[in-house]
Image (cartoon, rainbow, N blue to C red):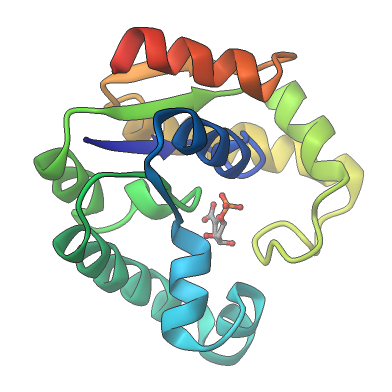
Length: 171
Ligand code: S3P
């Protein structure tokens, strides 16, 4: 069984994924960590040294390598992974268990104000610019996120509750 978690930065994909994998005794893969290992650089270093276009190409390439080489697992994708090239079609071709962790603009803004560092797309924004940026960006990205098989609300809910909901609905 392959469960794929998608959603905006700060929606909790990694924390929920880790918890879910533990409960289901499955392997957990964090796509950002996987890319960092393959590229031998951190995500901010890749953006800084090679630019976003290089990162997006590498992301698509490593996505296919990950799915081709692995069996059962829970995968937390990067926030942008489903939104570029034909990544979403590719993901949907490999599993029917794609779960969107859906957070509101307000929740994401509150969470990301505290976690802007190491996130190249938002680290240059002031707190007052952040909410407007997220509002527009999430609107564009929801086109892709809403293609998921399941959508789970995350606002104000602990990781445990979210992974229990995923287990009851998806597994
Ligand atoms: C990105 C999200 C990040 C990381 C990169 C780009 C995005 O992952 O892949 O900084 O485009 O939304 P997280 O969603 O795990 O922060």
